[in-house]
Length: 135
Image 1 (tube, rainbow, N blue to C red):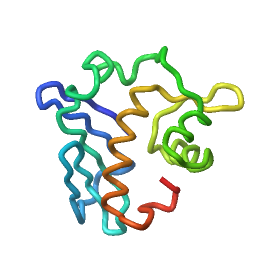
Image 2 (cartoon, helix red, strand yellow):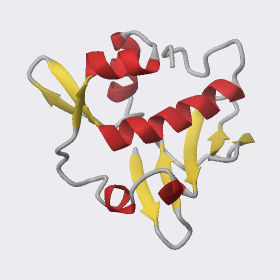
Image 3 (cartoon, helix red, strand yellow):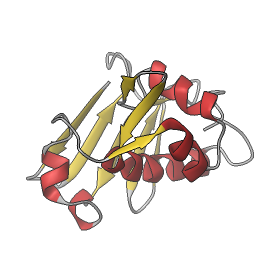
Image 4 (cartoon, rainbow, N blue to C red):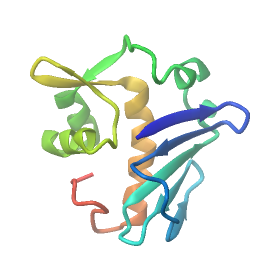
């Protein structure tokens, strides 16, 4: 999984796994475009006009060592999901995080961006889950 911010286009692109497949469906919202495979799983997400909602310095430093951590329990509570659902998302490569002792730590900027993606994913699959992770 990669997170790349393109300042020229003002788009944050998050890719999941291999990108040699064509998207079967594109789901658009004002903030996010999701590229879904034929099973409905997200292959790529593009956060449109990212700098309007997230500081450019943080978007440019997504791969830098973070100082603003959120623990797994707090992040799960923020999204209204069980911890195992977020852990599964982290382990599958869908959310960057760092293991620290018994817990995972996630940057606040990652959670803010992920909230937008989660909203679009839920809209794309009303009444159901797109990948069984609980998110």
